[in-house]
Length: 436
Image (cartoon, rainbow, N blue to C red; front, side, top):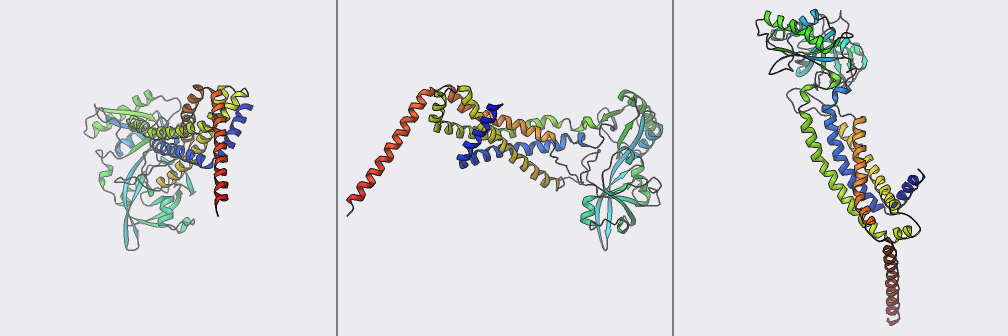
């Protein structure tokens, strides 16, 4: 490992001697790496978000669909029937999106709520900034108790930590705030960004339409926690007769119903079709890095031509071609590492910027852009690529050249350069003597 430390120290000294060249090479690689890192950050935020959901390996989605639409949500009667009669599920929670009216003085604004079932907080880990979730006896049809998100708390409620002073008026009903949900909460049901959390059984108190309780309205996402030892096949075999009986009782066709049970940690199956598109997009964006590598390769090749005499002397002193190529590779590795560091900073700044905005959708949706091990690993792999590829051109130049002739050419060049300088000084002295 001594040779590696020696090569890296020598590379740092060489780069420090040419700060302009070094800065240009680092910025070129940083642009190529940064564009790819930011693009992967968006893919990571969308396709790998399920693995970041707290305790995602313990909970699962339960979809009740049909042959043509297998990943469908459930109605309220179907959810209640599954929750009561399932023998393989420890808990069944439901969440649904609801638009509400938020009154502040004479002004009324629309806000979005996540209506959750009583078992929701036992199934889904809800990170709180402070406060608590409501108790079972608090979430009654006569009392409106809510949780608010951290962003709503800051922008609408003045960021007061005194929960007893926080009162809301939602759909003309006073509501009491008992907790504030952290801004980094990732909802298992999707990228929906609610303002408040309300109890599912507070529909009548909020004056919601009766359609929310009808069997034809599939608006609830089911999140379950299986019993110990329950397999996917056993859960499907347990739940399917329940939902078919409920559909038959409601006068619907039951034969076409299908039950899909998917662990949240395995990823949302509805997003698997985007994997190919994301891969094509990353490959296309990779062309920016390839162009940056070609530009840096040109810089390195020009630099190796300038260093012909130095490389020739090293060869004459016994350095093998492999050692010379190792030195060139170490130099480019330092450039790639610096470029990767700038790319990570760019990705982090982009993540903070993009996370502050909601997606352009009819309902508020927002992606979390984490700087996690996937992003670091992807950037490290690209940096390794950027360290090797630009060094191929000068390495090929070293392998295919006569290093002894480099030494002679370098000496001739140096001698010619000195003769030129002497000639210039002679001309200047002659001009000075001839000046009257």
